[in-house]
Image (tube, rainbow, N blue to C red; front, side, top):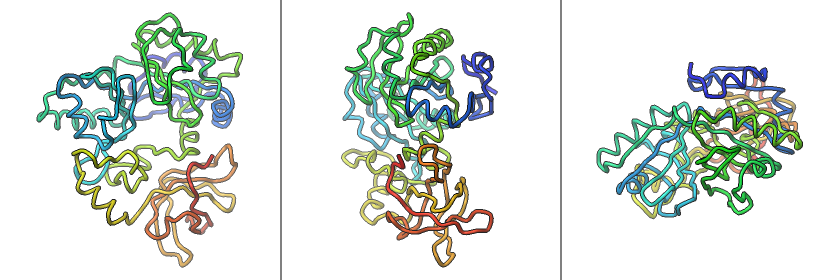
Length: 359
């Protein structure tokens, strides 16, 4: 089992550790609900150093990324980040990733922990045609997410970088807690605003402690993977392996907004056909109409008991105090306002398709 540079710190804080994507990771510290509300109302910090990081450099760097991703890399300026995905050549998704443009011939690609090896092989295979310089820095870098309405005030205490001048999905390099060459990114996966910072592993504990002290006056809490999941789900953000995978297309997953047809890329013709003809299934949000918690893998039915879909993610929303979920639903049942039923222990529990985000 791999460990992040902050493993010992998590154990000393009493975190409950679980295996996740090949890493021993903290699933919770003080409790999922408490950590969830800390991020929504104050500030929380996450160790997400299990994520993978690749450098793509050289004269062919942009051309390679342009071909293997759905979004348009031409829209990236230096200092800007872009959410996108790798199509797999069969209409599915290898991974959803973030690309950071560091310079004209230098890009930083952040991938999901469970897909590091798969993504590396995918990029390497397509790079045979382009010959860009690829470097896997996943084992060398740590990543901490500072999230919540007090995230900027917390981080601002530790850096000379004016965070108020860093727009959403932009990044810069600066000093944090006396550590130089830290990549400071106005991104995150919670929907509550904040920053993600990348740095060498050796500085992980120093920066974690400094952030904890800086955020103490705002009620900062260390947060685990469980609250990260409830936070992203309330905002309707996809999780790879649950809501998107090698069998789902970006258009089916509601990711048409990162699928740009003004360039050539893997699966372009297939996705263009889907766009023109419409998809037969679609990822939607739904809310339970009775007290119940939907779970990954539960079947969905129509009023006559016919199977019309499958739950991909579900939880009890801490903010709304009702069961919420994401599911792939067959046409025409994916329209907003449609009544559907979740099969829970042989009982059909009513639910309704709703507009995302939930909160």
